[in-house]
Amino acid sequence: MGKVLDINARLNLKNYINEAISHHSQSGDLLDITEARQEILSRDRREVKRTILTEFIGAMIVLPEKGLLKVALHDISENGLAFEIDMEEGSFINGEEVAMRVYLNQTTYFSFTVCISNRRFIDENGTIRHGTNFVKGTVNDVALHHFIKFIENISASLKTDSGDVLVSQIS
Image (cartoon, rainbow, N blue to C red; front, side):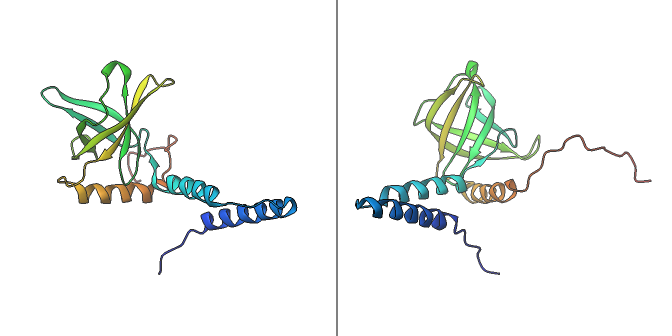
């Protein structure tokens, strides 16, 4: 089976162009679609690559000579991730490299390094959200790449357990 192509961006652009042409043909104005095309492509690109992870996966920051600090992963993409820390815990500075661990269960994890690229205060949570880029050339580059693809692929079909009944025996 071949690759499935998503033509939504092209259809959106085509619809925009058709509407703009019909509007501008009446007034005789010159139409420049470059900016609109870039906006649509940028929006579609962002929507496809970012996967929201709030309360989905456990993560920790490794603080040398101190220990581990639990963080809340917010989202992940091919280039980096965003995590939140309670304001009382402090903040990292832009450009700082930080070792992270993603936990698959309570004891099993894989580690990687990120570089802080931005941070902002999230008022409703009382947290500081840090945007990061993955540091390339580290030990777990391949594992991290596959992990991101795994998360992207399953995120569309995840469901929330609403208290399904557990049984203690089959019969």
